[in-house]
Image (cartoon, rainbow, N blue to C red; front, side):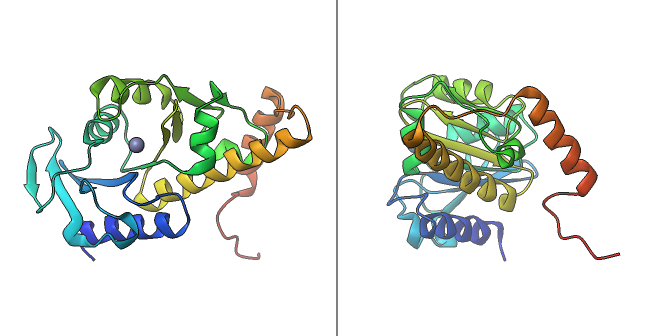
Length: 213
Ligand SMILES: [Zn+2]
C-alpha cells in the first residue's frame, strides 16, 4: 500500500467513525522529509490515494493533482516541532463542542492518560493561519492531542494508527465529559491517582495483548 493510500484509508475510517464530516478535517503522515496529506475540498469518506498530495517539509508540492489541505501550516508546524509521525485534525462533534466552552479537558477517566494528561484548548485563531499552527503546537507540549478553541481537535501519534486511535479516544473523552456533566460537576482524577495509573500501566503492560504465562 502506498503512503497516499494509507492516508486515504485513514480518512475513510475516521469518516465512518463520524469524526470527519463531509470535507472538514484532514489527515497526514510524515515519511522522511516528505508529508502526505489529504487534498483540499475532498469528501473524506470517499477519499482515494489520488486525493492525497505529497509535499516537502516547507509545503512545496512534490506529487498530487490537488492543492494540499488548507491546514497544511498546522501539520507542518507539528512535524517541525514534535517527533509525531502522523497528524489527524477533525471537527468531531463532541471534541468541537468541548473546544467552544472549556479551556482544558480534565482527566476524568484513566484512559485519558494515554494522551499525556489534561488536553489543552489552544486559543482561537483563523483557520489555515500560522498563528493557529503556533497556538496548537504550544497546546500539544507533552500531549498526544489538543483542542482548538471554537474549531475542532488535533491528535498526533508515533504512527498513523496511533494518531487515529488518539483522535477517536479524544472524541470519546469529550463525549464522556458531556454525559458526566448531565449528572453534576464531574470529579477529575487527582495527580496521585494519575501517577498510580501510569505506574500500574507500566507494570501491567496495559493496552497490549498479554500472552498467558
Ligand atoms: Zn478545521
